[in-house]
Length: 260
Image 1 (cartoon, rainbow, N blue to C red):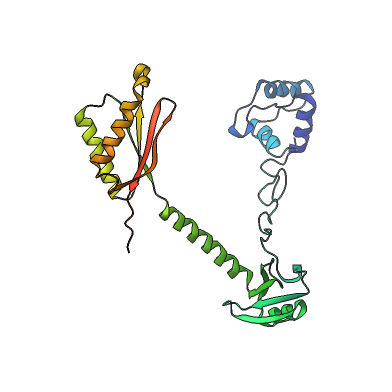
Image 2 (image 1 turned 90 degrees about the vertical axis):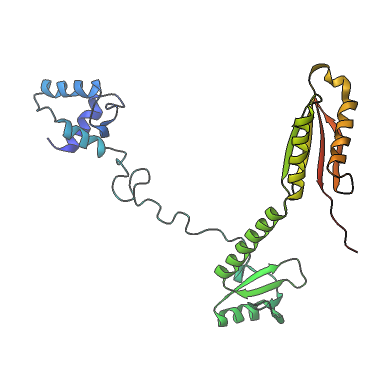
């Protein structure tokens, strides 16, 4: 019995989902019942291999129904992601009647009409890209789009890298109003090490229960902490002691030396 005939017979005699997972080589109870119906009709019962082949080549195209078939297949939509939308205005998209043109190395080439600028770009086999649309007249650059896009992406990455390098990380040190002398000295040494490395230090004093009645003790503790780090001449207080819920916070940083 041919595979198409098996497919038609199974569609007529069984409910949707006749096989729980035919690709793994085992079948549901409905598939077994369909084999019994074949014997009632006087036809030879299909083998499990034939039933599996029937499901793989069914109406949905199996794993794509060949190249480009089914729900995507192996060859479906080959141009996906190839034509990406450009993030700049270039060539014939420029609607200004007069533009200021600069070369690939940003050397000024003067003010000229749009048609003259396009002709110059064509002669040099480059693109005419609008770089300053708000200027009067707008500024366009003669450069290949691929090179322009590379320079733009590289500049953005360098700016983000510089921003990360300039960002100052903050280290947090937590204490309690009842912190003993030894633990307090450990916190002071840790804060001194962080500040020497250029980090900010966030001091957090946690209050619990009735300790909220002794906020003055927390402020005195912070003042003593600053003095143990060398006083205002060595560290700067970026944020004074401030209550936030059940916590008192203060942010310290290294004092910048002003050169005369």
